[in-house]
Image (tube, rainbow, N blue to C red):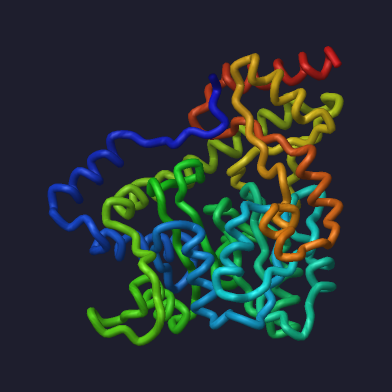
Length: 360
């Protein structure tokens, strides 16, 4: 089976973890601090705060900006549910704006239409590794005096007009095993604000900046040195991984061009797409997924149900129609694009999809 995602770990990560285990310092320590500094430098920001998941990074980012009960945060309904859940965790209310059909990212114009008197922040998602329109979105945030929090959990190293995502506002990244780089589990908050970073560090440690002195309500969101050791090695490989993903995506797009009932991913001008997912659209999605499975090719559906249509959100009273997100949820199919694919793997994926298309 050609897997749709496959973490890439080798002896370097194993040795880095072994060094931590031998040191006896396995909780949050110097490796975490080193990883934070390296990740901040990589993304061109002043501060990075390591936590134990991408969800925790989103939650901490919102709390560090003082978002809470009575506030509204505008975001995309076409994302993993953690995007909106992190807003609910604070007591604030997610407000959804529909997506661009080409990139699957939130539509900046529709986002602007949703701004109301209770809107405190906007949270674009850089879905599948393609940056959202940060030029328009940043202008909206500045013009309307709104906080800007980027859900960059799928877009490590992605760029908009040469600037890395997660550096336009406060960013949140995930290091889950299927992401473009991993720490096994983990997340990172990025910011140029010293006060936001300091508050986030307190939030992740039970509201404490000094041991046993708790100045605010906080949580246990800390990353371990074991995870950070993996992250330091993975970060060194990230650009290499990205180049391979982009190469694989280019081959897939070239090979599938003109295939009936297949729409390949778009890369907008000025955007550096890192292809966390290579997601096509087809009106016969389930049929294609089953066919590829029979051919030994794994696929994924990201995401079959938009957030506003999830049962819990229906219980909360979300009734707005998001037609572009709902249509995308019926048509998207992610194909393997990860760095471990061989030339033969890619050729097999292309020929199998063309065979499926020609037989229908």
